[in-house]
Image (cartoon, rainbow, N blue to C red; front, side):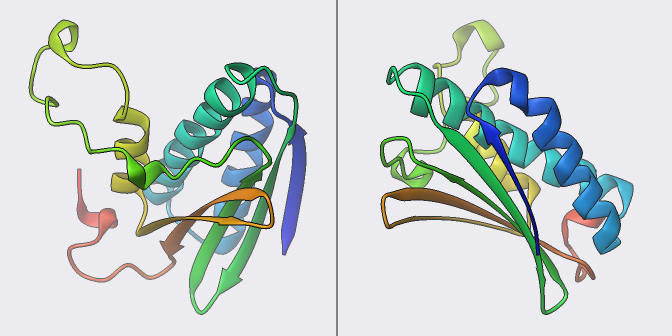
Length: 147
């Protein structure tokens, strides 16, 4: 298990990205799957910072934990901002519309859920936990074969 704790500030995003990329490389994920995992984590970390901490007028940390479990790389983002279940919001329905006509919100969560093999949320002991799972050996039809 490897972990990193950073301040809940936008200046921490580069450090989070570097940690995720390092753990994905150590786990043997290919470049495409590493990018997709990094994108997913980055989207949710940005939401935690912007909406969980900054918009709420709070300061706090983001803890990132990486573990390998049964052939999977599991990344957990944990924060102490107000509870926010990303699955409580509907998927954007206007993704095919021109950018200027789209509703604001929801795209980051959509990107996160589409770019990893599993994406889960839990609120435990006063902490939000966003859990990202990438299978080291993707099965047919997995993200590894998608453009």
